[in-house]
Amino acid sequence: MDNEQCLDNHSNTIIHIDVDCFYAQVEMLRNPDLNNVPMGVSQKRFVVTCNYIARSVGIKKMMLITEAKEKCPELVLINGEDLHDYRQYSYKITELLLHSFNLVERLGLDENFIDATSEVNKRLQVCEGNLDPVGNVFGDTSDLCDCGCTERLKMGAIIAQELRDKIKSELKLTTCAGIAHNKLLAKIAGSRHKPNQQTIVFPNSAVELMLSLPSLTKIPGLGQKLCKDLETLGITNLEDLQNCDLTQLSNLLGPEKARVIYDLSFGIDRSVVKTTGKPQSIGIEDSKHITAETEVTEKLHELLSRLLLLVAEDGRIPRTIRLTVRQTNKTSRLTVRESRQCNINPSLFNCKDISQLPEHNINKIMSIIMRLFSKLVDTQRPYHLSLLGLAFTKFLEKPNIRSTLTKFLYNNMEVQSITDIENKYDTGKNSPKDSSPSTSYFDNSDSDIEQSTKKSKMENIIARRRIQNSEDCESPCKLKVADLRLNSIEKSSDENQNVPCPPNADEKVFRELPNDLQLELWKEYKKSRERIEGESLIRTKKSKTNTILNYLVKR
Ligand code: DGT
Ligand code: MG
Image (cartoon, rainbow, N blue to C red; front, side, top):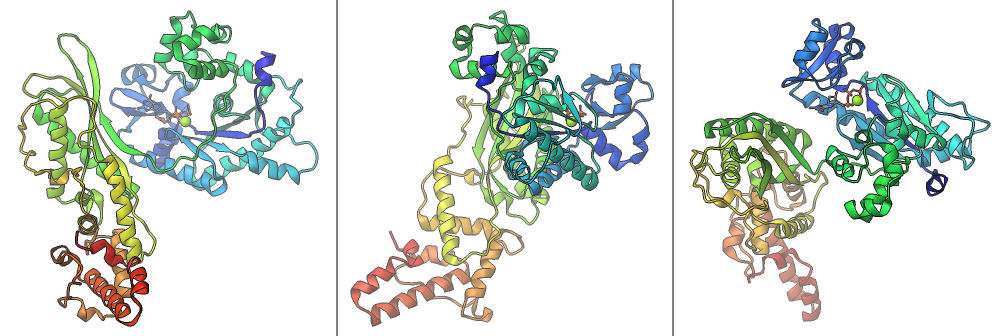
């Protein structure tokens, strides 16, 4: 064990912050009458969380509603199936933390890791005298490490208290925090004293903290499945894991994973705090038993409406849609979860507010979803679904910078190159089934599913332009259009004039461009003509290579 501890590095200071009874607190903020009564938040048949008054009478997270009501008949239940407000609070917390720290990693909706190392070191440079630990300390403090981590963690606790105070004053939420030299210990330490408290764990107590966990599944990162696998080696508790044969563990899990898990059992965690960007996918699922196609379309329609609200909040434009189903084979009783995805034409989201898409666009998206469905489920035979899920992925960021015309075109080229790489229609793992479409949603052409055929640069520019250039759309391209107009020498009254097509451009393609862009291109052409006439041939050639007209040159 001493040897293991020597391999551990105590130089970092990590804070883990977890909101107390998160959904319940949000509900209590919405309705303060709930503050002084036992209350829980329900989803389907479960009380997913409850306030601490309810916990004091034995209500637990994920308890069946029937059981909870038996234990506490006066328990007030609030339906928490709409996650909208919880998500809003969740992002506000992370945002608040990001005001003070660069390295903030979200975990679920109500947890954040903060790497406070550099702030701690900065503060310690100007700090005089010994610090008192703020909050609780886990374990024995008589034999503390002398590498400097003791003072660092105490400073970390001061910062944790400040952050929690800030969350309380600005968002009115109470939280718990754990302070340690790594993420694993910080997370576990935080759960030692609840609610509205914080706990430091010094490295000398790492193993003791790990051994205090009631089961292997309580080690963050070890799921049920992994614990089942460990059982095959006779590893059923933490001490078994600490004393296991690492070679055997490596044979089971591979050397890297084996080492990570073995180290975790001693409280050693080398993972770093990674700043969480925007989510790579936004999705929702509903576990409902479904056996008929009308129910499927109804449920998917409902999921899509809810999902569009989330995408609208996120502000980006999705490029891919993914459908997930979980179906049970009646004969084999096997339950399989499968997903299929395909690219989706971003022009379908060409609307000021994505949550208010026109019905026509919704129907088109639905038809794509139903197509995916027919590839996942053989609709010609009876089927039994227990889950349906929808997700959007591969988002396009809406740029918010003023763009010049060249930049606009350049960006479009960049996007296209990504499109070409990713544009695999139906990237799901199984081969398509041959079931024919049977709902009214199957009325679209393939135009809403992005095709992988390579387009000419010009076609791509026009396609992008079409997607984004909507007059009533607050899209970045509206900005771009505005920019072009600002940069334009011609007056707006000239905008509808018939702009001559530069002789070296493809006229058909040119005519599809908006008037302001045509004008810009014509001016480019004129400028280059003037140069050709006034300068030497060599110089003219050189300048020609830099003009945007090169994008339009006939093939
Ligand atoms: P805490 O941290 O023990 O004071 O209580 P909570 O309620 O904050 O619990 P936490 O941090 O484990 O989870 C945050 C929220 O996530 C919680 O308010 C409700 C929801 N939640 C937790 N566990 C589950 C679960 O197993 N299923 C579902 N659907 N939601 C869950
Ligand atoms: Mg929590």
